[in-house]
Length: 126
Figure 1 (cartoon, rainbow, N blue to C red):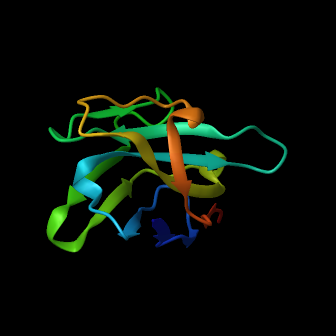
Figure 2 (cartoon, rainbow, N blue to C red; figure 1 turned 60 degrees about the vertical axis):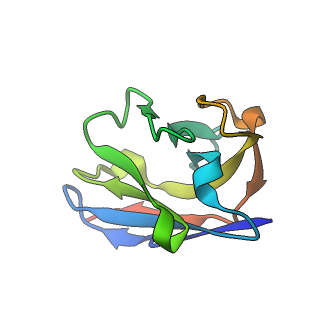
């Protein structure tokens, strides 16, 4: 089972990006999906998660109101729409699959997730 992130890049402050997390080997809608990021010299930070099967979403305070997580079951993909980007959002962004099947739960602790992607670089700079 694997997930793969895409959609990163260079964007100016105030701009937007949409990251994708595509799954292979399993159906994303059966598991919580978490989004994390790690900046150089910093610990991995949990940003958002979307739980299964009801798609309730949660966000850390630093991205609340700017980032939106969503799921497209037909494409077996979860998205992270990022708006009003700031230089401090610069990091490698990861998605990962939650451990448990359709359990109406997700949180932002990294140890609750397995099957991590390789990450996609997001750079916010003028």
